[in-house]
Length: 392
Image (cartoon, rainbow, N blue to C red; front, top):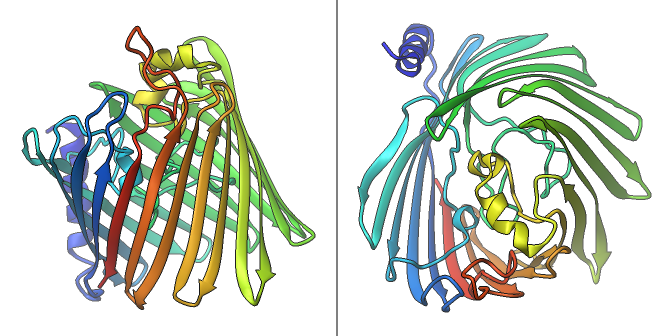
């Protein structure tokens, strides 16, 4: 029996006995996004409708629990080569899935219908520790949008629908020496381009006063790696930083991000602002380096949230009404001068129903005469979307 199927069988046998005693209720999430895009440097104009359905169940019995989540994603496209922002339109991602818990139900030039078990993990808990095995969400990020030191399925920073982090296939042990400290070990096999890599990392985290310190080290995708992160609160603002050092193909690569965020009261309403800067050794210093980055192993493994060497992002959210918020997000590639603007308006129609209208506007050089991208964000076509999300 292949190793992935063997592990699935072990998990099923482990939970078959102790869990049925307490069946938690079935919960769900439905997202529908209708998008229209103008012609871009690499695509024609067109329309797209994306429908995402997620069902979740978390039965518990004593010290054991099972986390289950199943998703289907149906994408209908008027133009076969319509270029969108991928996961920035709510598509569930699972780069490196090792367990055979995903697949394509139907696909042609205008229809893509996929499904995936996004959570399938058993957890055993003790007051001082817990062990989780299976597909589960893991985040070691310190900064909020640009997170180069997070080795597990980071979000697309332009994604307007960040409700659920994609699960990864791993074994995880967490130990809690005190209320303000934590030790965590993760072992994760992952398969990319039919090649399986192994990640084995140990992380420590401690909080004291206005500070939180964290660090991890070990092997990341078969190569040595380590990271440090610091968070501190100063004058009402939260300052965050993280840095990772990686060995990739006999080359040492440094990835760093720093950021700050704070809330203000303006006219009796809350304004939240955030800014971050990332310097990524994996990114392209200039537009001419983009094809190399797009063909690199870190990009294929889903490790790169952005493509540039130097990237700056900023976000502002203003609650103009208890049910209405204005949002604006921007990403700027300082190397090629291109930018992505993403304004949006959100409306909470009901306690479990949210509506959103927004746009993506790419600014910068488009396609070069040789057929390559002229910049990172200049290739993004102008697009507008209307979405509805329902929790049930």
